[in-house]
Image 1 (cartoon, one colour):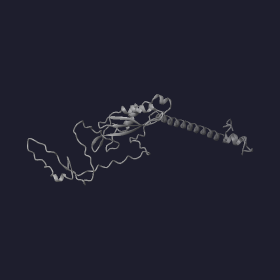
Image 2 (image 1 turned 60 degrees about the vertical axis):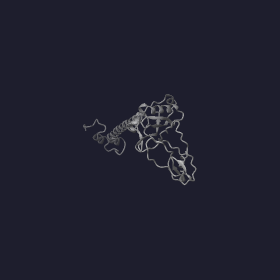
Image 3 (image 1 turned 45 degrees about the vertical axis):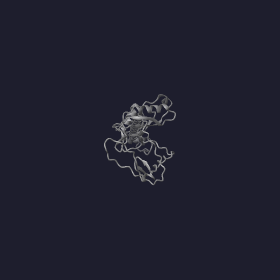
Image 4 (image 1 turned 120 degrees about the horizontal axis):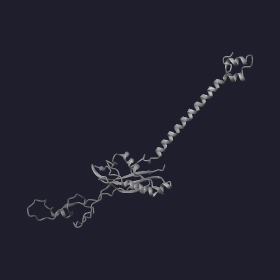
Length: 267
């Protein structure tokens, strides 16, 4: 009887105290289930504490990753093709070549010191219904062609090289697209006025990569509304870019028009 008598939840004590009494409910049942109920409560508290700690750690990890992403300039989408306006009508077709009038080569003779056998001039009967020219061309004779007079005086203006938008070998930034993103991210500076006004957006800059790889004709194709400082900063960064790998068409260096979107985004 003395073993476990001071323990109120002892089975021996409870059996003696509640002998010949109602044991289906009341104090007897509470004392019998006391140990199991206490163990269940302690296990529930431990499980709740571990779950709360795990949720807190998970939220802290996600918050740190989000701050790291917001701290970087968003340059994940860069499209170097010029923007296409769907409402702009297609360019007109090139004009047809001028008609060719039938001519016969007739060059006035030149007196030289040494006798040189040249092509003899055509007989007069061939010049009756044809015009004299520097070269012989086949034609039907119905076209009216105005032949400009060549005086040989004055300088000859050189035609400006053509600017291409798409070539066989497109220009590229030294090191590729990843290095271009690093360069812009390192050199871009968010203008203070636009930062205080909470102005953000994407600025499209167009420029020409010359045959020697240098950058020229830097302009804004589409700027950020209400943020002129963002446009100026984008132009400044593009002008400070190093020389690009040149573009080629049919194996020769050419001028190529490029378009670069730069996205300004506040944290």
